[in-house]
Length: 360
Image 1: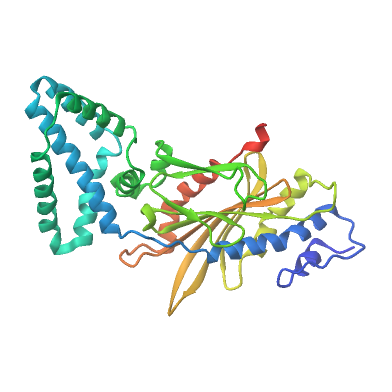
Image 2: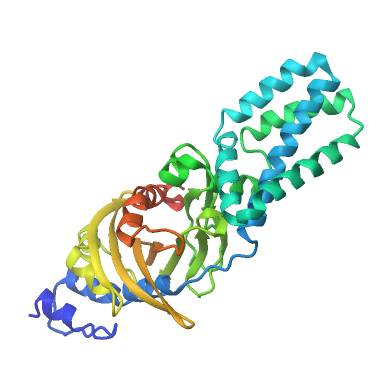
């Protein structure tokens, strides 16, 4: 009888070799799924995210939105003294939220992005705002409706692009990224009826400031990027269907065997350096966590990336939540420092996984 070590060593370049005298179902199950897990690991490392809008433009639109809101409330106070208290209260409510706390962060980032042009740009936006409001013949009803709208904005009811840009510049969230999600600023993606989901219905939640888009590769359902598309985190959601013998369903023990550290570390792509391989539980299912470093070639330059992935098996499919972090050119943070800062967020996102068809 082949040992577990012998069976695992047979996976050269992801091709399983099973001996007829191998009678361990656990070993056969691991042998069946390991190549698929390897392929998912490699696919996640190669996915890319294309940013459309420049960062300075995202921030300037958000900044103009905030300045316009403040100037409009001041106009309401001046033109309708009987609404002055309501206008002040609405402004206080907005400023007390995470969105109101973003003003300082937006200004600091714009100053960094625009450099010496920032003072001139700031003055230009203020002048444009004042000119626009000066031409606005505001009625009492419009003033009352605007105050109510500001209160709704405090709860996040505003254009998604503005909300994302604001939250992406939040000072507290920049230092502790997991706070954005834990404080309720999130977006939830559900795979129901998605053509790449292989019939699975599950969902995860990520920070509201992350940009999102369709994956480029066959098994990659959705791709997210932090910082409104400009941040250091790239997250991809993947599903790979596994062909199994008719009527066969793996036991919990077989699943636990698949996610043992000794098995997980075999899925690190060639050239990768293992950091962490760990068994854990997601949504009540045995699961695995794998962290490794790898160097990627992009055009004429190379980039060092730390990969963190969470993987589970459900209804004959592998589900993988994959995070990639790379060192930013204008910061001194190392990959280790980036990993320590973002690891709590990665775990928090993974823990939001809900397999909806479990509850039907």
